[in-house]
Image (cartoon, rainbow, N blue to C red; front, side, top):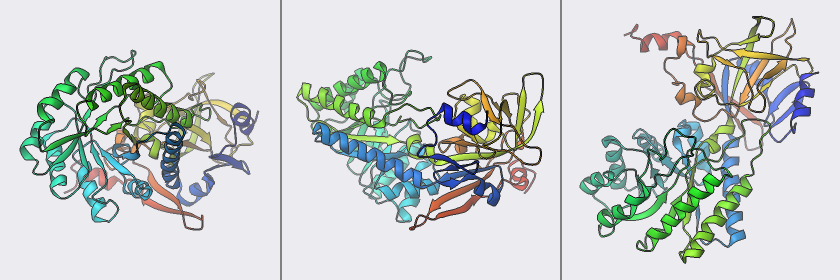
Length: 463
């Protein structure tokens, strides 16, 4: 069986993202082998238009659900910056009239720089999440004092507001993160983040209700396993909206809920998830509960991170050689490391869409993909839809190239971008792929492959 036969018979292929011409793969109409010929491997790249496409799709689906259910609130899209802090991601996302969610004190200098460059107005919502150290809370106060009018610290513990009470010199809206129950299979029952349900109303009454400095605008909700059609998700969402209604009865200024992130991206060519259905059901469920309680529906905020940037990214490797280790284990050795370039594969057993870039007309064989480090865990040997990996046989006179797609979130920061990598494997070059006003492809090298001198400096061998 040829490789193209395997893919076409197993999946709905070609599709809106992937197709094959002359036995070579294209991703979003970008010929993958053209990138390889121009830049070599290993490389990472981001296809930037995908970021705007996802933002606009979510906005349209929420508006469609609002119209269908006559939902009177507003929808606000915020980008969760921790998914990828890179300038090129922020610049592309901010073209779409969005807001930002932060999780660290070091997000705040990025906020200021985006404002200095004219990319982020001071009236954008800056939703400040996370368990905060003193520097983070100080930076939040500084933003408010410097005229950022919609900074929204989300209280994560009972004592956080005390700092704002002492140091905030201007009125400020705040939110409260609710500590949701985790799925039963988790090692813990309740999220470590947020404030438990029983403490929320007392916190409001004691420290916010009659305080001229603060007004409670938002309740924040997040489920670690994401937005999925399960009884667990709908039960936790319903419980959260009931809490909103309880608080709204004595807090008229409360008008918004943040349902966090959690929209998934495709990690396999076999991907069965209806964004339209899930968004429609979220809107319908919130409206139903509020109508039953006689409470006006809240404005809905989301802070999608992986969904925003995940499907824009990919990593490309060449197969350096093949090794038959015994009667059943054939290894294709790649020119990089999974541990350093795709740490989710190693640390979380995450699966991505993996396909050959060339030789789609060659016969298939079952293989294991091995990385360059000496670590026994540096491998990839199963797909999301099947416990095996199949790739084309490698011709004697040519190379095989493989791509991992939808890797645009978290991999660079988890892998220590610009720092030391396991076995001192260099970080690969990073390419940006965009389109001009006429739709023509534009590519540029964002960063070259890491060199040994940068590592020598980090290690203390250079002054």
